[in-house]
Length: 180
Image (cartoon, rainbow, N blue to C red; front, side, top):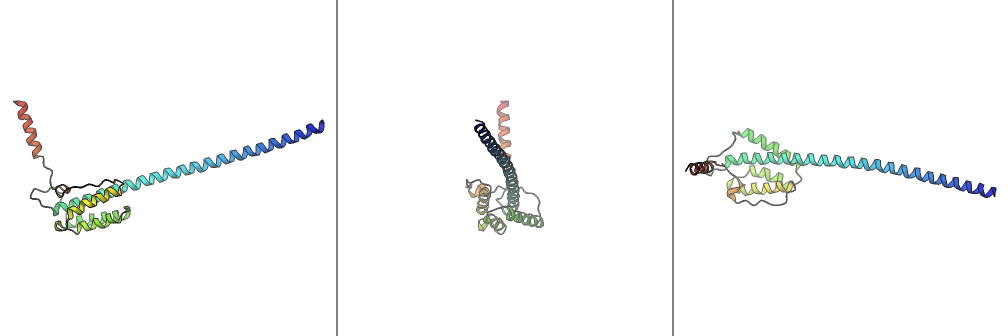
């Protein structure tokens, strides 16, 4: 009986050692997995922050480009009404266009948007600059992930002035009705 007990004791020890080694292996595997999971999660967070920064920069560049086109059109379009615009010299406009052209080239994935931007400044009303401007806006929307296309008629693409005269008349009419 002694030899059977001794043999069972050795088997029990071997079983405990094997189980302990397996348990240690499992713990090490979990620690390594958690380490790489956390590292992957940190990399994913860093990628999200980078993507957000790139998107925000792209929005700014596109807004600046649209502003420069509006500035140019405010000198090009004459519909007989007073034109509201900032005072800008040829030098100011040229420097702004160069800066925006380079910025668009660096941050936009679509080549068309960069090409059309410069084409707008080399076009005039007879070349259909207003339709090209609408096309540019849609390329900008697409670049920002907005898929719906804007379809403006030529009278709504660019406004030289937004008048408050009608609002004043309406306000005066309301006052007159209220006093009656």
